Image 1 (cartoon, rainbow over the protein chains, first blue to last red):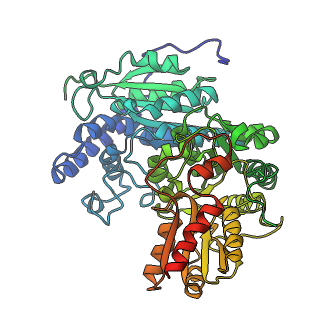
Image 2 (tube, helix red, strand yellow):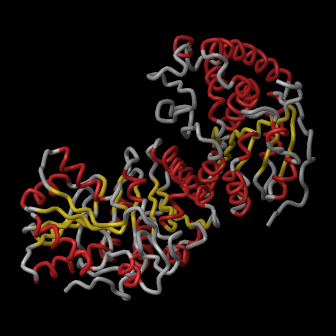
Image 3 (cartoon, each protein chain N blue to C red):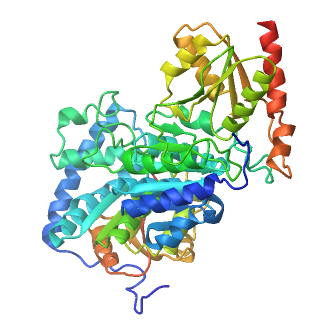
Length: 257
Length: 318
């Protein structure tokens, strides 16, 4: 049962965390975009759009949400489900100096830690799970979140999902499970970039009304525009929502890719 | 005295007992099921440790992947379902559990022909083939209730990493005494190889013992070896016992392709051990619904008398 009496506003509550954070994240993102272009030039723009649309989400989660959690004493975990956005994460890590340009240039090489899809066996300091097969991340996030409930520890788990990925039935199996177990320490961040492998999502297999679908599965839903600081602010707001798993739909408003 | 099937002996009841004991010994053990706890036996754990039990509903892909998440968080996740429907999640098992070497114990019940009533859709004849190809996986198939208890408890508590444990339903033979140990990578030579050696596992081990008796009545000495550890397999014992015998026989309630029919042939080929391998099991057909386990074994041609006759035909030719 939902124990909430008063829910935060349904959409648009994206109070600015401050001009300082906004300025520093903007600079990090500028460098990350340059790194991403560097990777893409070498691999014939492999899943380029997916990485481009995920970069703000990566910045929000790895650049703001995780550090805030660490300083506030909240254990926070990021699970990546749409593993083909790996270049966005690598570009971000390179922009932050976690990996060097030399290593970045080994992207997708057989011996590289930077596999085309995130590989936990090679990059276990950064990623929790190997990826490449879609539709599994939410189940993984649920497991990590449920373990915290069993142990009575405060842990929040964010999982990055693609919108095309929502075609996978397992996502909805997991959505029902999160709701049924009352996993209010799970937040699904949906990269609503409006495009999937064949073309526009609404032409391939319509996802809308997307917010209603998550709500029907017992989730608390927020929508936000694809901006790193706005996403981070929305995530902090969602952190206070109790009693339900939460979905943050990150809408691309930049027109067609 | 070996009993082929015993109403009193049950794989799933043994599973429930083993999990309760594992849960008592380690608070990190979490058990998951997909709406079949009463059928698989995990209900015993759910009653004892409700806070560490998850019923994800009828969603096996979510079942095994949620277990993966629990393992990532440091838990020992035991996911149980009918063997057939666990295999629905094979790609998740392969890409997440095997690839990341996660500490998830998959327990498939109702395997082989044990779910006689439910018919072809439920009779899983491919699970060993599908799991033994996975890098880093341990694959175990206990023959009776005592073996089930020992193997489940040992695997869950003492062997981190991915494992598949293949269980039947209720019709378990009674072969071992309580307290017998089953080390991973081992086997049990129940009777030393004679003219023939039979390799088997699971419920068909009871059938194999009956086959050996029947052969003895017909003047043929047959050894019986329990290959409960299918991966890693006890290759040394397979080669040693096969070398002693003139004819090697594998008996299983699984497809001979990919099962121990394949396993034994691979080991003998790799070691250049020149023996004919008579592979008894299920070929290019599916199961069927039946009123009893015995009736289904009869229909599938896997009764002791039928198998004995096939072996006698081979022995005469040899």
